[in-house]
Length: 249
Image 1 (cartoon, rainbow, N blue to C red):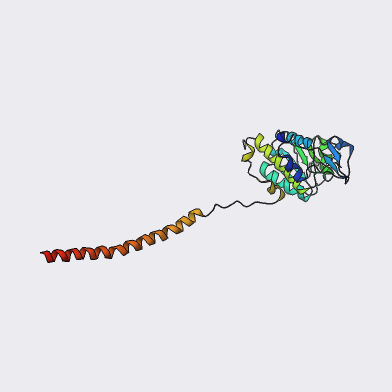
Image 2: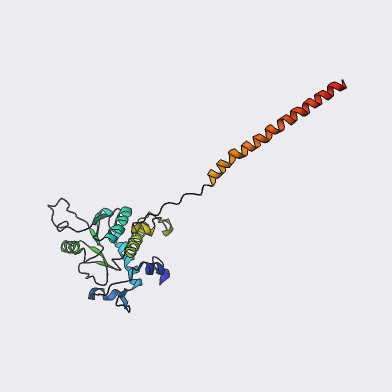
């Protein structure tokens, strides 16, 4: 199972993407793997991976400008912002104002063709409006989320910082592949940490060239000293030879 996943199973586990809540709703039963001793529900990693793949394919069917990502929480906003920066999708952070999708008189009225919500509970207004007018919805759903109006469910821990960062990282990478921006995963250079709001500085090359440049003048100076030291000896030798020649004559 691990070999066919988008990322190593250990990375999924390390991000806590599979850790649900102590509450569950009937809608999410099919995605729950087991219940831990502490009462937390655990989501099925295989289904999480499968759903991320499907969501990426659906996202790839739309132009980025026609996709609206709604992120009401801090952690989801950070990860979603990086995703939108890389893909060109539109982003709405914070509270979703009623009427944005249904009231054409509003100055901020939008007509997206696809909605991506990070929490159907916290972004309920966006789900309701999109559902009313028939806009398809992709939703990150935890064990306590109802999935009414959500067309493509991605079961996951939709509250954890690392979990959300990993999801948006994988989606961005899959979209880059499907759009032809990269031909292999190795070419996707954006680090996962960037989706957590952590920018990793680019490593500077070792100053080997600078050392060589500094050493060169020193070597030249030493050579020059040796040359100057040899000149008087040659001159004295030449003078001695001339004196000898004069005596012979």
